Image 1 (cartoon, rainbow, N blue to C red):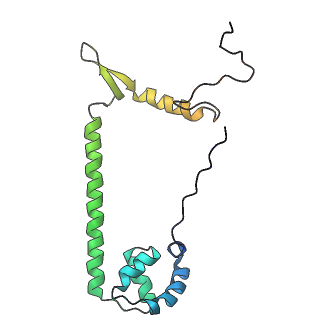
Image 2: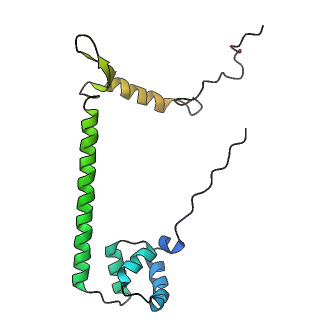
Image 3: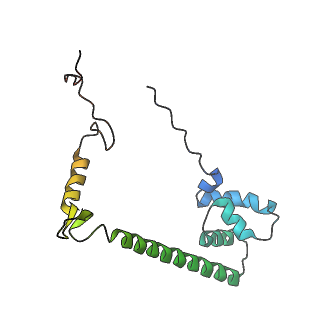
Length: 161
């Protein structure tokens, strides 16, 4: 069976892969052609850089930007960063809460409880041993969910009638 070739993912536009020297050279020719009023967001989008980099490079190119505007944008970015960090912490806490019923200090996964109320399942030590075993396995060994194939010299398990 011939394996289908994976299609390569497209790259972002070349100008978004430029380093600083290349961006500045390109921007020198782009700036005179820009007709809009909002140069900083346009530069940021065009070259795929963050706000501080856009401000710094525009100043290197001789564009004067209002310091109040820069401060407001930086404060807004700081607020967005704090919000995303808070959301990540909340999501981690929710995940921990969900797993709390299925994990404890002794068990990585609690499959159930005995009639006496004792948990049973996979311990943290068993999980660590399984991970080490999986990592130590040769690359030829089948992964989870793959059928086990007999070696070429091994007798077949099928019976002929």
